[in-house]
Length: 549
Image (tube, rainbow, N blue to C red; front, side):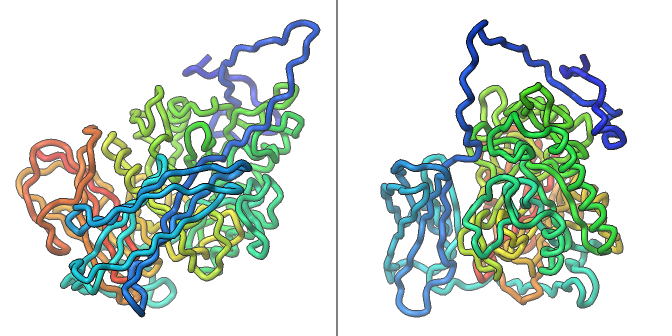
């Protein structure tokens, strides 16, 4: 036994593949229980692993051209639900200073697992112009969106030009010697429950039944302007089941994962300038939440065949995030919290809980996603989900996380459902490779944007976001922003928090422009920039961590 795992000889299927793991397969010790003599255990009930309530807020940033009426739409989903389900919801409008301006409440009954409700509102003529915030709460779901009331004056800082890839060299922010690559770090193909033809795709596919696979995804993404794509397949669907099929072929499951890695390596080699990545989305929604492992050469899982053979190369206990973080740290794997919710990623029963091992391996947190089941091909998907509150809770717990913005595509529209992207900063002149992207992610040189034609970064006394720094005396935070489309800035917040405090991340007071100077209180802090463009699309820089002496 080593580190709580039983080490057994590798099967022939994993030889020459898991060299980095010393040709071993890891099995957690699980006590066996036998059925009473003469009695056969009943067949297990079907497990619906991804059935959890979700809500999305649809709200146009600018008012309609005619009249002052505003319409907000709240979308509800509960996949797999057949009986009617009732949900209570609250929608609140907050002034630019955070105070409450208006609140609506309602109760909606979902039929067939989905539904929506509309809020019609006539804007009072006395309401001052400005950038307001809508806040939705439905069960444990919380969503926030900025909206413009009237015609608020833009900030007096014009967006700088941003060179676009293929025009005048790689995209760059003025004053920073880094190239920017844009892509998506969360998507599925027919290796799990994705790859559905948009012509008839209505949501997640039954596992392993989609029309298109990883190579199709990389080709589609490259043709649509992405510079990298991670196909992150659900780790427990390699048996072609959402729950578990003990009659499936374990060797075929492991071989499929290896095929996915080979497809990514071969596509990257044939298409210089584009980085194809293949990884896994570990976990189940019903038991704690999904996270992506970006660079695992091994399939991880907990399922076994009728003979007891594992489907995975490395057996990991279901829903045990502490054990997973420990394994990831030992192997040097990097992770991303996917669409984090307030009840997810528990440790010892506490959601969004901190661990030293987790802090060493979890590098990214999805702050915003477009609708995972969108079939749009024109980047016009209006339904989005925001997770800044959960990401902020993780930051306050002590995690060092940069923000990402992905699409979680289940239909075959990788990168095309909306204009959002994850941006990664590479040292100028660096050839994009898997290794270069992973190194930048380890350094947290990553930002999230709803606009693929815009970029953001934050520096502190000249030190780039993602870093941990010691400081004495004054601190100057500088926001670097650019838009190749010439967008203006409607609102800018510099958010401040304290790692390990378990408190609330709040906007700093007194921020008037792209540069803010002050002297922090002694102790640990983190800061990140959140910018709203004049079209309502938002960008989030990575945090920078400052230890003030």
